[in-house]
Image 1 (cartoon, helix red, strand yellow):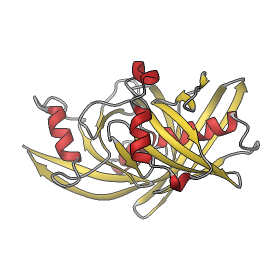
Image 2 (tube, one colour):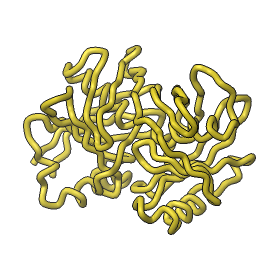
Image 3 (cartoon, rainbow, N blue to C red):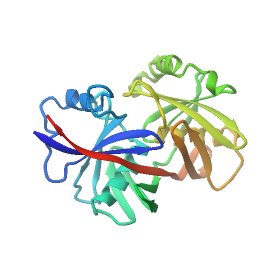
Length: 269
């Protein structure tokens, strides 16, 4: 079996994308999880933080199905969603604006600019109704669960070991564990490092984590009121904007940044 694939990255968060509008070779594979884990492996496979399927949907432009690099189906991925929008444009499914379906519901998105292989994509994220302060940090769900821990020494943090410890903390067990973001606010900009569940490692960027961290910083009065906030991840910069409609409630949440096609290929299974 030969499967064509596309490799995309959004601020260093990289993904394998497969067009499954006309067949479901991967989704219906009897060893789907093992196969996806193999494809995402950086030494034995193609290499990626996750894998996405673009599928037809009866009510929206397309459906996003996301898998973590461990082979298990994941929750919403912000950078993945932005890359999938750029991919849908590449396939001529959409032009500039789109509405698509993901595991956490409907998402609007706009391609604001295209330059060479890179598209600037603005993606609407889910509204935030609950923000919890815990002894570990600030916890909220932006399509995926995130713990945000603020620090004055971001570079000094052992992201992998501390991230793994917090990711598996019993306080977040009911959510299947949590993603963990370590952040530092400097001159009204946010620096961030993220430990992602499912990848079980630090990634260069995390869209839902960047969104969660910007909202957590704003809600904690660490940021002034402004139109949008710049978040600097190790793989690049992204922008987050939102409206605060009530205490601990945020609407019109948008994540904006680059989505770049890296290469295309075919893999024989």
